[in-house]
Length: 317
Ligand code: ATP
Ligand code: MG
Image (tube, rainbow, N blue to C red; front, side, top):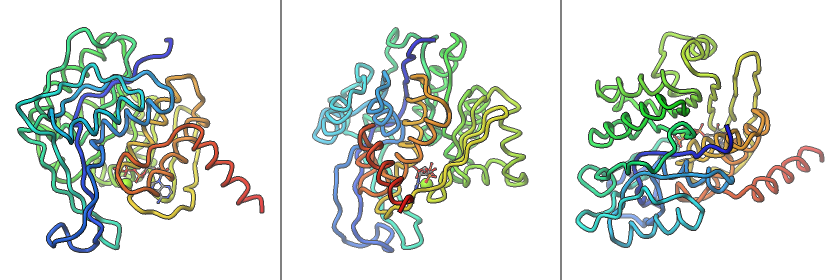
């Protein structure tokens, strides 16, 4: 397998971030944005920045928001031939506001926007040479679920690989169709990248090690456990790597998981070892939380190298 293309099918959004905490989007506050967003788009933008070949499949409106995020993806080298620019619908939006305990409230406007009304272009992907990333959050949208599952089955049947971030939010897990879709995506995945809270929702009765064992019993070869500020763990066969979280000032944690995943999969696709890919991804996730805006925290390889150098000299002194 030579330099596969990493692809995603899913939402492209812009996000507005409240500068006021603890008000749950209910009070008048200053916001900044439009920040480019959408979990699959954040993932793929970071994969492109790490040098991977990428194809984004999704939709934006032919409006300022749509062009803001499309311009960003293009500037960062994401393949956007599969992005539908729709002049009859507006771009999907998200609003976020944080609480002091780190939790957050979101309002999404995605249904019936350009973000969930796109076509998957035929012939864009060389299916057998594709790594398709499925972000479980997208499976909660009834309109996108079909195209995502179809693409996933086609990639799987052609000998390509599936990678899944099982963002198992409770509202998603209560939706039976979404839950079935997530189960199928996980069963077809070679790479699984749950966070610790995803494991709690998926396997409430299992210890973490038992949950990892269970995940490895199906098709998955590489499991990444994302631990927020505590770092991450990568498990594959007899290999296990622990990555301690870097000490950083957390400004905006949204997007860290996608940034981690995009870094990790992009490096593996280009032949890096699990240790190298995990080290860079753990640094990318840490850097991601230090900047406001979900995609603003994405980094180039040179920034990651500088960050890791600075951390090394910190720990040496
Ligand atoms: P998302 O909010 O995008 O869904 P997630 O829950 O999937 O994120 P996290 O565990 O929050 O994923 O973050 C992904 C990775 O980023 C972590 O495994 C870790 O490597 C890094 N990271 C996240 N938050 C911090 C932090 N506060 N300090 C240092 N590293 C962090
Ligand atoms: Mg998180």
